[in-house]
Image (cartoon, rainbow, N blue to C red; front, side):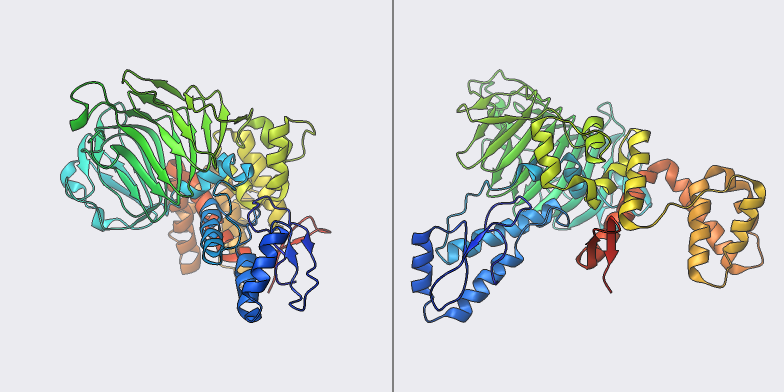
Amino acid sequence: MLYRALLFALAAAIPCLAQSDDDMRIRRPQDIDEATWERLKKKYADEKEEFAKYLAEMDRSRVDLQRDLPEDVLRKMETLRKLSEAQDAIRRPRSALSEAVALNYIGFLNATSPRLSGRIVEWATPAEADVDKLAPGDLVRVGEGTFGLGDRMERMDKELVDVAFVGSGGGKTTMFFELDNARRVRFENLSIDCHDSECLNLREGGSVCLRKCRISNFNSGAGGSNAIFGVGAVLLLEDCEFEGMTGRAGRNGDNGGDAFDLREENLLYLRRCNFVDCEEIARVGFPAAVEKCSEKNGTQWNSGISVHPEGRIFVRDPGVTLRNNPPATAFERATDDPEFVRYASGEIQEIDEVSRRVAAAMEARRNLPYWIGLLRHPDAKIREKAAARVAALTGKERPKPPSTPAEIDTLIARLDADDAESRDNAEDALLAAGEPCRAKLTEATRSGKPEISGRAKSILARLDLRKEMGAELECARLLDWFEKTRDRLQWDEAAGRYVEKR
């Protein structure tokens, strides 16, 4: 009764429990063998209350793939590890993250993408780069030149949360930094100069996405010569290149730096990344996904990825060396692949075995964070499918957009309705209609009724932002809502959707 959840399996299923026949009346978890259970019973023979608290804490750390985001998974796994070690219970394999977590690309996207507010900050020149003026939700457009987050040789103390830095691309934008605290931060379309140190030094967790970045100058010859250090970090890298020879230790031309130094539990997803002259890409003691990557190594070392015994590697056309011949699980489809989405929605019934297991473990058809994350998919048809699924799972139908000028006029009038629900529904419908409503909304901003003019201005501002980051804003709004309400959400089997407990 006190221990009804799993100890270290991260699949959604709850393990069977064996009833203890002693007077402690605490059931033995299936994952604890008889010898360990007997040792624990003796240890806690006179401390039944403390033992019950210990098991209850493990129960609270059960992973729920319907509600937990990747950062929640890592936090719970760390709790379990500390509990098991402190109590001399089971030496839980550190690699016991399920493949449903390791292979859920959309989960990584949700965990590492900033939840943007719509505010855009322009750094046209390095002189305008002031990190202290940034706020959560900012998108920073970085111009041409070299920009730093703090002093060149100092770590940045400021915690960055929900900030995106987007460069000018084509090698025109270079940034340098050493971040210790970063949560949902993205760097995109720029070069990163590590200045003989780590650009990311996430020793206490964090979540970062690097997209279309070139990372260099990390081969320092000290402290591992790595670009990214992580403990309990969630990392998503897409279309990036690591160049390992530059840096003070690479002047002899035979030793490259290491792309990653990742310790304890982490989550890592590499997609279409290229590793040039890296002595080593990474050592993983946890599940990691490698998709369509490549390497070119002119150093005297073997490069590649080393997989520790407790680690697992999932590969899709990996293109990099897997050292020590580790057993690798091949996967055919990521969770954002159109075929996987069709299977998850129930549109098709057959798919490859790994995808079937992943979809089953995450209960993809009713997994709200998954469908919310798909709202930012580049394929419009998938975005439409995701929007319909989110509406079905929440019971909130998407507003039907107006199709005639008269309908637009009616909705604008309802912006001043007596009840808040009618006002909100009218605003949602006008926003869904989009650009065809712009002219009449502009007229409405001059209305003598403050409610109408205020809401019309708000809708127009959101329409402007939609051109820049519409999908990101909607995902941010829904993921914030999900985190605030997930503990109150309960699945209603008859209705086929979630209902909020009051």
